[in-house]
Amino acid sequence: FVKLGQWAATRRDLFPVHVCNRLSGLHDMAKTHDWKHTHNALKEAFGDYESLGLVVTRSEDRSTSNPDGIIGSGSAAQVHKGTLVVKNSRTNATNTKMVAIKVLHPNTRSLVERDLELMQYTADLIDRFIPLEAVKMLSLPRAVANFSDVMKRQVDLRIEGENLHVFRNNFRCSENKSPKFIDFPEPENGWVSEKVLVEAHAGEDAAPISRYLADDSPDGLETRRKLAGPLLRAFLKMVFLDNFVHADLHPGNVLVREVTNATNPRDLHYTIIFLDAGIAMSLKDNDRKNLLDLFRAVVLNDGYTAGTLMVERARYEKCTSIPGGKHAFASEVSAIVSEFHDRRKKGLTLGAVRVGALLGRVLDHCRRYGVEIDPAMSSVVVSMLVLEGLGRSLDPDLNLIHAAMPFLLRRGAV
Image (cartoon, rainbow, N blue to C red; front, side):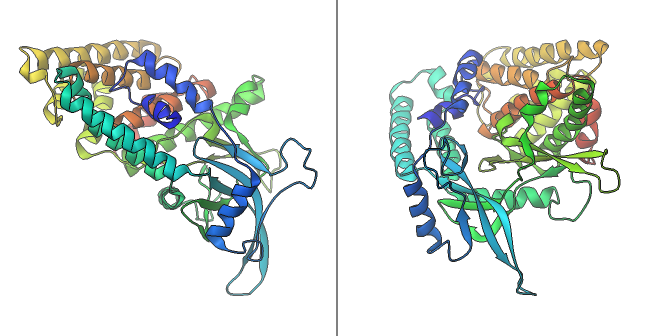
């Protein structure tokens, strides 16, 4: 049910903003499981894993604060540091590399399935026996079905492994290119199962991006500016070019690796690494068009047309059943866009404008006017809110529209 609260925090099309903001605090909750479960999960998935070359980094001193090498834990799984002996198929030479070992918490699948059955039963009951328009508008059975889909992805780490391959392909992470602006961990071949995922370790030199936010020195501010552009462009690429969006983005899932130029040690390059790719979203055609229209509306100051198209494309809406409802909804969207557009006088920088907030307000109007959108749209908007806020902290002077325009024209690059 913690995960339900985390999911509800992203559904601004269903719940009021203040409720979503309160529930977002659940993202900080985490638990850990004991070493015995990790060992049993590894043995079940891979057999005698240590003889095959996988070793979990553990301390002989059990009195230390972290004897089992846990480097992170969430509501569904925890991650251990380890090493893996990899054999070169051509030369038979072996190499030991650092890896991250992600293991689901005990009984995760059975607990999730039990909770989902209860939620689905309750949602169907409410939808069937409470014939109120507001209840029908929530479409609780469909919302629970969407949440079920999200949860099933999180309790099968093979899906996260597949997502990582897609992201790595989209961003060409395997290419031996320099500099590399964006990276995703590579799943280790033959070391992915339903309950365990072994992937390349980001490296001891990789640090949470939040660490850079505390450095207000001139050098620190310059570093933050270097990070903001690639971070924002990477997200825009996911949304507008790839239509495959990391939907669990928060500062804890973004690392930064500093890479020294071999010919000039004073010239540092920064690689942004995205973690925890178990939840990835793709927008349906109508919602993708709506998002593009809203961005274009900001540039052209034509929110009325964007609002009208949203009503016409909606699978379910009650605007047209109310006299003047369609006009009222489109006018509300127009007012939001016009307010945003007026801020162009200050420059369309991350410090002056809030595109994520604009989209969040549009979703709130969808909720109030009964204009149904695909749940993936809400998840993408919340991810945009998080990334936009992070980008603003890094570089408030970064021009959002200048960054977005190439992607709106489908020819942007990170």
